[in-house]
Length: 232
Image 1 (cartoon, rainbow, N blue to C red):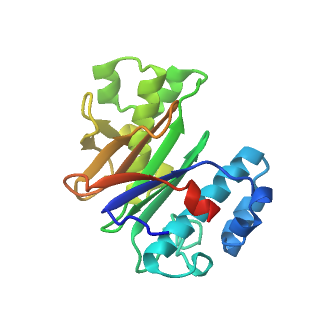
Image 2 (cartoon, rainbow, N blue to C red):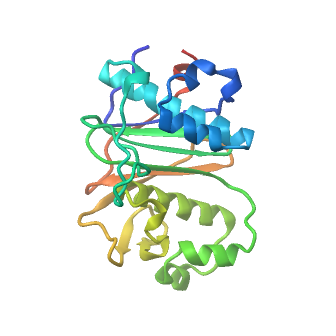
C-alpha cells in the first residue's frame, strides 16, 4: 500500500498477540525477539509486538526495502546496545504503547519523541505528580487532576524521548507554559541546546498523547491508522 509522506506521521494501531501473528514476530531481529520473550503479561507482549512490527513496516515502506532487513543502532551513552533505536540514514522515529493503543511517530526531517498514556487511577497521585511537575508548575497550578497529570506526563515524556534521554532526564526539570504545549524552561545539565516543539494528540477515548522534536515549531503532523499495515 502507498504510505503518506508528510513531514511527521503518527501511526496508531491495536495490539496484536504474538501467537496470532507469527509473520510479525518473524520481522523482529534477535534483540527484539529476546525482549519480547522476556515479557510475561499477554497485554505487554501484544503491545510490544505491534509497536515494533509497525515501526519496521512503515520505515521499510519509506526506504523501499524489506522490514525484516532493517538494522537499528541501539548504542546507549554507556556504549551498550540498549539505548533508543536509530535507523542509520533513515528518518527519526519513536515508539510508544499504552492500554489499547500502540503508536509510531516518523519524522523525516529530524529526531522525534512520542508518548501515549491511558488515563487511569494512580495511587497517591499527589506524590507521583511531584516527580512530574516542576516546582514552578506546582506553585502556579496547584494539585493536578488525573487528566491534567497524564497530559503533562505525555508532553514531558515526548520531550525527553525526542532528546534521546528517556526517563534518565527528570521531568520535574521541565516547566511547561500555563495551559499550553510549550516549553517555558528546562533546567539542569540535561537541558537541550536549542528549542523543542510540542504537539498534543487525542488518539482514542481514555488515552492522551503528545509528540515532540527539535525546532521552533511543529511540522505538519498527520495521524494515520496502522492496523491495515500490520495485517498486510
